[in-house]
Image 1: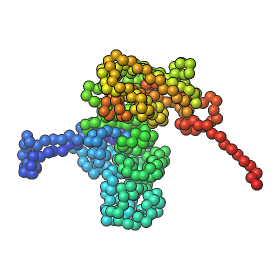
Image 2: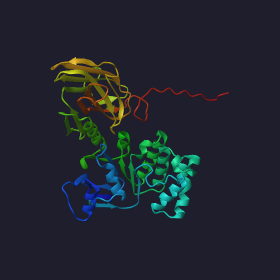
Image 3: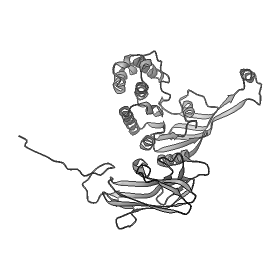
Image 4: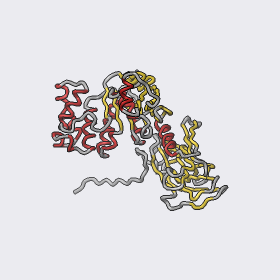
Length: 408
């Protein structure tokens, strides 16, 4: 069952050359000088009960406009939006709050607008205050609050009662690390109880941790939909896309999606994960010595070359990453047809699970100035524990526990 259903929803605005043309348009007169700005082109999607969907895209893609139409603060130009059940939303920070009211008064007012009666509000207010953790400030005017304190109250109000659909638009990014962690714990608890989530964020880790589907918005329309890790790979490649660059995705034999982007001035010839005996590995033991071998070929003369690599877990979160810029091994003045082989030696201090290698060729410490080649899932491998004590997590480390009894 869908808690949210959008069908051919769009939003456009008219741009008038002057106020006279605006008034004339109200009276039915039309002019060629009146421009129509399409902020959102017709889009359709559903959010199912218990599903968590991320909406990602660059600034100006239409994300905030879309959310405002869903919560009803903005009317669509066309299409239909159907919401089933209770909705709680955190959009623009401080939206709906009065700066002259105290945190307590704003909380009571906000809950009343959400449809809760005085008895329900009175009952939940102590828990709301405790969750926000702003102390005496809860009874001071909102105008003296920092942005982080405003976010604490806003999130506490939105989640005072478990909604059927929770909508969050970047607001958590202004909070401190402690409260962000606390907020995501509550979101996860709600998810386990059946709440659906619609999250707009640039936080890759948050998206890949709490969402099971992602929509990529560009120029007012959905251009990609799929697993969060695949969409975030494509989105990051899209950000780095330059003139004459390529961007492609292909399905691997294991069913995962491999993303490639780059201008092609340097080509990745091969990537292999090898044992000490130089055997390719798809299954790795905890704490095993490994070599990552990357062969590249220069296609066009470039001033300098940086190799970067990273290991990602099954959710697409970076476990470790570095590059030859940081290790001060930048290669200068490369000519066409040069071939270079990189060998990276490391130990698999990793927990059990599936991991992927990412390889990037750039001209500096980031890929934003020149992205020659970027390959996600260049090598996928599994880590198994064959001879270590049982442990949890992504990191293996030797532990020595001393126990002393009968202390005098």
